[in-house]
Image (cartoon, rainbow, N blue to C red; front, side, top):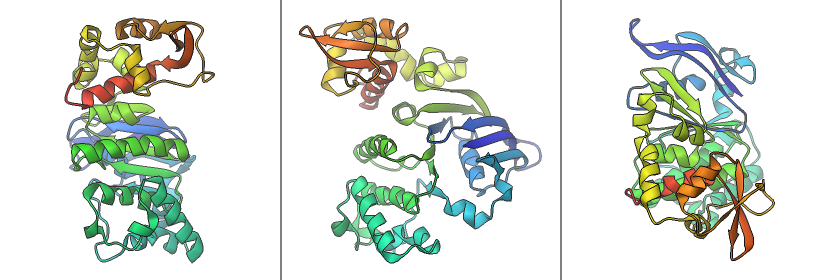
Length: 325
């Protein structure tokens, strides 16, 4: 658990880059911080591992002040992924990944096995990539290695600072998909900074929207889309809010969610009612504002379940494809 208690950061004794943050990030949560440039999101992230010292307040990790941790111990137990991939060019991929495990004095076999497992988890064939240099990899492959390196020593917390923003759209989408799969496999607390609305909707369990160093709204993607706190949130997420009108005028139906896999399995939080696969998304949205989960009926058979998260992720996926809706 990460807890911010009245945390501020002031660089010039006048203007606060971060202003009186009170925030709790739960263990195992994928927590996204989003906002316009200069809103304080990266400063907030870097204060967690003391790359930036806070000016006021306290940050706790597992109920212990971060100032009470040995700085090396603190950082060894927090993985960090940057926008600038920052792999060491003279080292092989294996050597890059092994840095922190070696500092923590893991034995060689354990390190080798860990590297094998992690490379496989992000779709990189271990024996093909292990001995390559970073210059032999594409940008997307290098960023996968960056994610793997952050996970190498099995830290409890992963900090990610706009890690995919420099990539081409195809590589970025693939890495987003990898992160969705990865977060289901690993029990890590992930704090992820982005300025991209679609990315936040796709990845976040909760989204914290910042403006001028302050938290404007912190909630689930569904709650933010359905109930934006003010005009700033409404405008910042305007694509997600505009989707309602566009969505309802489109030809998409529940069947499109089914065909693209945005559904749950039968028996997984089944709802009490059902919606036919031929129904419009407007009808589905109306039902999901009243029911947490709903069954899907197709050809007189129940084929799966739906909730608002499935709908939001379907919409985010369409928005990402150049406003397909």
